[in-house]
Length: 128
Image (cartoon, rainbow, N blue to C red):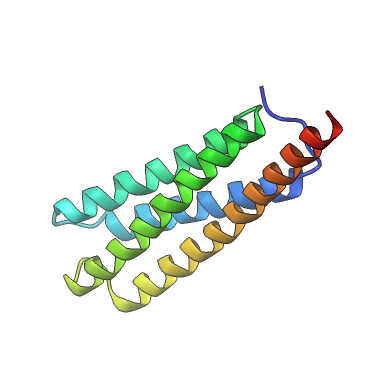
């Protein structure tokens, strides 16, 4: 059951940003030859999507905040690994830059969603 909030625009933007990151990553890392780092990056983007989804679907704001924090940590790790993938020639500099831009967009949306969940939690606690 999803949380009933006024944050539907934020949730929609976060979902869209995560989908764009997944699609761009799948396109970038789909080309052969197989590589352990490529597989790691694809797995990481799936974990990011799972954390974002769990955060959006968690009916408890405290749980959502935890999922969003996990997504943010995974996004930071993913961004760092993108630099390595570029250095190894798995992806080109332009593609790396494009993916890092999408990562920044998802991070921004995760931060906004987490902030809104925290704000709701504080209001609920203050109301008793």
